[in-house]
Length: 296
Image (cartoon, rainbow, N blue to C red; front, side, top):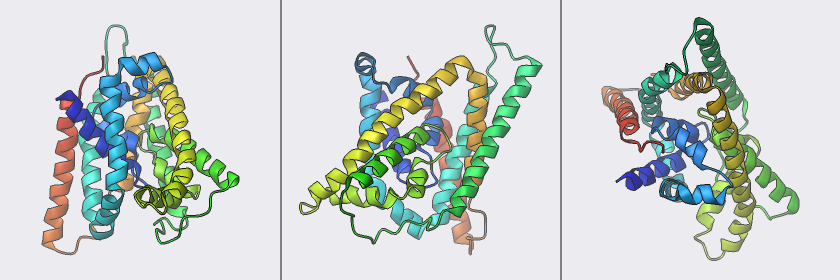
């Protein structure tokens, strides 16, 4: 049962990673596997093998989520943008109690003094401010809605390096809750190329063209995941409360960023649908955190 839950969780994270402005790291926190995820991602083959029952289903689900749902998510945002954002907002809100508890976790070995508590609050405020600034940058991106009508470009060494660097930076961002790796790839100008190359893999006439465009991105993502996970794992080990404080602030900022407001709701039916999406997202996040397999 744990492997099935991990596989389904991976699909959700994979879906999130293809949406500019939505963070896969946020969903890893939402589903209660963030700590274990960043500690399991490593270049140490023995450690990876030891965690195969966790890493295998999760990464398989993520890959399937990217492959199968890149089109579905686009359709949802094109046809039901307000309801979709209400659902994602609910996911984040439902995870906040769990992260709040982790932020102010108190034990004999880890006592919370007044000074430490103030430091945690400052970290949370810094995380919130960083995410709001990131949202400001998102609003300044020209063409924030990707143009999926352009043809795949010819592969060159310069383009391959740009795709590699974008994948590397985007993957580091991917493991930080609230920061969208896809948005960074959009800012760096490779998001459309990657998203168009994925379905092109299923076209025999474009397979090799798409494959050689995706390979630099895949290598960059793999290296970026390892580096980003190592950094966050080190921070959680050295200063767990403060690190969770930053994560809590990032999640608050994500909720503010994703919340679509009420201007897009034009009738009672839409209002009910949005409320149900918000409640469904919050319940999924809260109860999935309870069901998530514990770290070992």
